[in-house]
Length: 411
Ligand code: PLP
Image 1 (cartoon, rainbow, N blue to C red):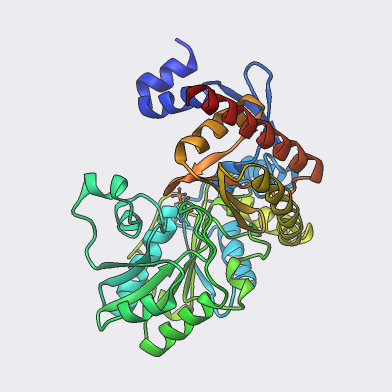
Image 2: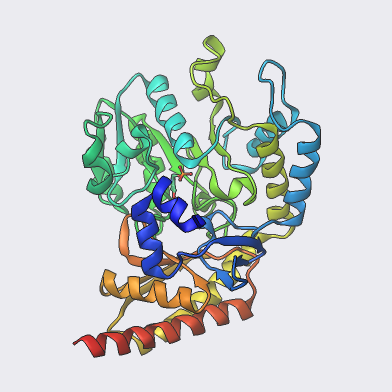
């Protein structure tokens, strides 16, 4: 049986079907920089970047080297001794994250980072409620899913964690109105990723900070997707110079080589660990291999000034897409983005689906936002070159033309 059939039979038949529909029922083989090759030797430009994970591209040599070095020494911590890479990574995060954030809890994924923030907020305040936003995406384990208001994901597993209030994204007034005596925290993505690359009005994060301060609630920024340079600043919060009380990071933190999640917070939020060191824990969280990868990823991101590169290349990509929007205004409703977190909103989700499969046929990888099927997101590695952006935009142009011809044939 080939890998596709094994995947279909033993992993996820629905996803296998979707991949077949998109023409991506192929087996991945190897990857380097912004490119991936399938088993048949076809090369793809990776403009999805593992949902904003591959900021450094595939297999950045410095991250690979750091991981190999740690692998030969000690990949896993025994947990009953101190792991040096883990401790050094937490200290480095304290240096590079906004404001007074100085302590880190490590998990292995974005959703675990959010779970930890959720629990720490409840423990610290002694209050149950959290305010989240419409189309927000914070992960799919039960706590994080309760903060991810999408019926298709939430309804099959109800009851959810109680105490979650949902407000429109981008409206500080709505947050202010929702805050009550039982509110522990507000959680927000500085730019919504899975919701369809939604950019809030300027001043939103600063207004949320003020509301949180005035009402004594905690502010959590979920930077799982926006972090590590993606939006043109190291953290998207840096655009407004605002510091949250807790911040989550994952995806690009592992340098595209190892999975890792981090919940970074102010010292007082980590007080519960003084009394009860195992109040929250993870066997693998922040293991030496992942920590070595993250330490290298941070150094590469800063040394190569990748946030600035994301800003510059993002501007170039958006300008190129603006031309396409004019040519295909029946199909493209809007093009928007911050840095290299870019979304193309189609007038109809079906057009987006055709375009994704046409792009795949032309060797360009993209995908929908999980909470917004009308939006195809473009999140290439931050090391992407102008020529590669041109290649992707040309492929998009051809894909839109093909979609137009296909639809004209149907209508
Ligand atoms: N938070 C945000 C903002 C995300 O974009 C995601 C994933 O897309 C998550 C949390 C969940 O991360 P993971 O898939 O690693 O659990």
